[in-house]
Image (cartoon, rainbow, N blue to C red):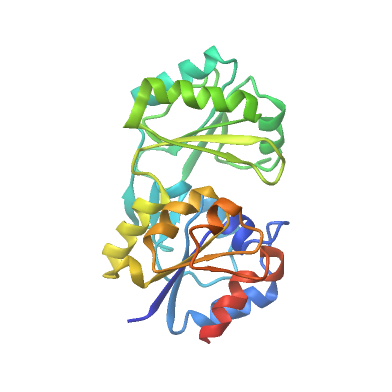
Length: 273
């Protein structure tokens, strides 16, 4: 059985400028000859293909925090959609805190994501939108509401705003929603992501393992942040890059001496060439 490697993208495989080094490209593409390699990321299919255009992807990709699993050929393996009524109710509760979310979902039966944003954006959200200039998925929605096929509802803002909002939403929706409050490492601030309760990386890892006929103990995963903890707890080899959060390193079977800017993942993978 081929080895299966699944890596997070931002601050793990990607360098801090969101690029892939020639060394990583060479190691990755060489290893795909006798191993399965893929990603588990909060990014969309569109962004993953953009970032990894030079890499050979040969196994299912875990996208949008785990709410979508899709092959490189655009075949959907699994979707975990957030209920539209709950999504709209979440939006209404956020308005009470003076904050409006981004809503990410799918249009009809397409794999292409929709990225809806509100007319009222805080400074953190405005910075995020700068990265999506001329992106065809981006659409202004006024008032902001949920589409029929919601993958996630995302708030960007300060910790002081999002922490009480998180606790407020938990008191209302309980375990009908997955809550992820994490720092946003590129532009500062924090983001709160609301997902289907099984729309996370840990559930997605199990689905991928079953799909490929693997035991999770036979999977090697790489990560840097709190949203990687679930898959670290499941998989036999859990590898943290040097710049990973201390909270994640506690769950790692190995902490690498190199950061994402030093090709940490590729240097580990090179052991198997």
